[in-house]
Amino acid sequence: SLSDHVISFTMIRGGHLDISVLGAFEVASNGDIANWDTGEPGAIPAVGGAMDLVVGARSIWAVMSHTTREGEPKLVERCRYPITGQAVVDRVYTDLAVVDVDRAARRFTVRAMVAGLSFEELQRRTGAPLARAPDCRVIDP
Image 1 (cartoon, rainbow, N blue to C red):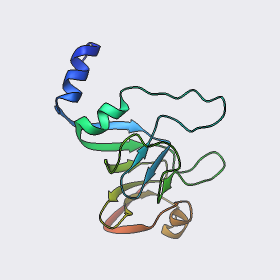
Image 2: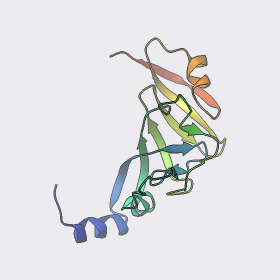
Image 3: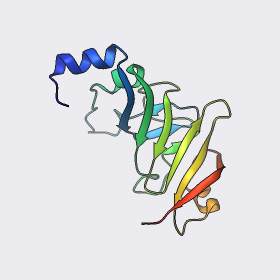
């Protein structure tokens, strides 16, 4: 569906969205999300509707690469970048895995991971504790 700016923010702020899918720079194991500013010199902060989305939707899914270009984890124990929303992310989709956020345990639970990647290697590329779901599946392209 398409709507204008006024209607879209009325839906968001009125709590009428079941799921919001957002890009992220980082997601913390307690569900914090950072997606609007890296703080890098010369970077232009991308403040937009994300802050409304993370408080207006019932479930938040983040979509992102698992690591930075330099290989640093983007799934972390604590976000280093400015927070968009605190304890709001429920699920994260990366290029390596699908993980749920277990806020109480402050860890990520792996629901699926790409074929050929061991759980140990995935943990090495992640900056926070991982648990493997009993029904964890392999994503085979």
